[in-house]
Length: 136
Image 1 (cartoon, rainbow, N blue to C red):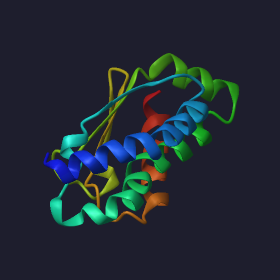
Image 2: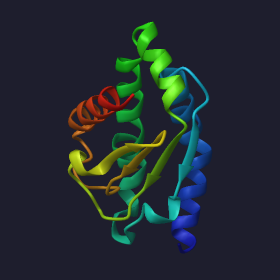
Image 3: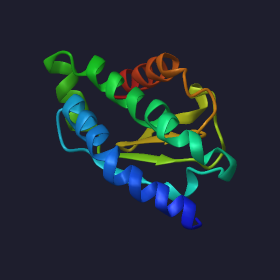
């Protein structure tokens, strides 16, 4: 990552991420661990879009999926007992949510392009909710 990316990442981590993380923790019902490979979430020509796309692609679907799953006691217990970590990366520029999410050994992996289909929050939320419900 260059200086521009480092500046953006630091600003995002300080200004937006704490609130998004708090919302995910609240929705999940416990202090879930995050492992984010920030250096993979960039394509230089799209840096100006990331303040908008990061929340839509990486965080809002998590918040909404956890809210849905933890709406009852059984869901809350399943999440707390099964989820160990949320791992966010971009290794394959996935833009289809069916290919972007995996859940294995307690690790929920989000491997999604930082820009493609950013406004398809509902699709990502539905795929993520179904994946978790089938694997918790």
